[in-house]
Length: 381
Image 1 (cartoon, rainbow, N blue to C red):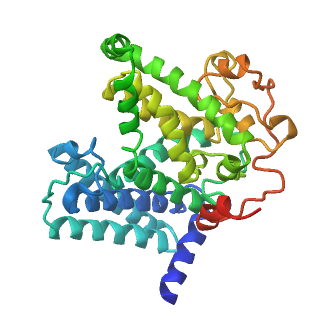
Image 2: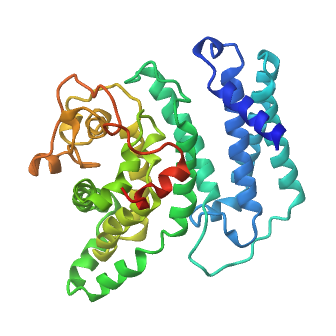
Image 3: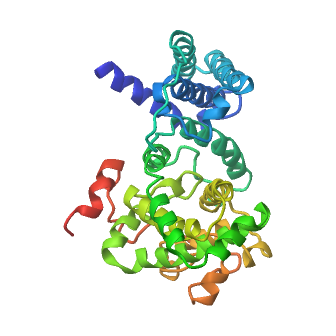
């Protein structure tokens, strides 16, 4: 195991290289890109080759049979391999380039050697390995350049402190939470069927898609606002929510740091009413995708202000104040989409041209590391 740990440490040291060793032309960017593309391609290949579609997100399953989807995976591997080769040519330390090349080759071997035959499985459980790969790849490709253009904290590197834990949180969110995503569906439909507002459910379901999505956003935000406040006010709920607030740096990955118990509670509280109101499954799925991108945005290390937009929609500055460790940032800005909820209920806080001086929880009581944080809410305080 010693060689493995040494290799892992070398990769970690290279990823977290000081700024002087990450300049353009050093091979660092091409090495990181090569690993990202090759790893995404490898995860997609594994999900496509797994029997029973256990690692495949249902919404992505039809795409996997598409010729262009397979070409896209191939291009990911080719791009990862090519970027890694560039890194090997430019960088003195070869570990990034070597890792990217090996990942691409392993993915190619698996794709050629395993028959891509899927057996049907009736269980509503799946682990979206493909969604995790696409999730990290595309949100990273979108938000990392945006954060570099106008960062709120210019001194914060891409691979900042605890970035490994947050990547693991993204993995857990993509796998375990999707695996249990069906849980709110049964009570949501049950409540809907018991409802005496059958005509209203039919009317809601008949609304145009572009009308349903904003209504879902507001309804979900209303229920989540009060759930969010409860997580701050009720001590045993705060023990779970403290994990999310333990992040001392804000970027596109920090929003994924949530205990799986909190995710399930929040998802149920927001999903059951929306399902009961009769919105169409397509509208709900589009909202989930929109909400994920939106949540990533408001946690990102982006220093832009939106003076007019922030009156109508939650912005990074607005939500950064919710995560601030400053005294004036305690228990403010609970809304996720619409700040009017905070205005109505007295929790709105958005100073002009001012950001929190630090993030996290005073005293930083939450331990570092995913497994320590997993058991933290259950420990006797």
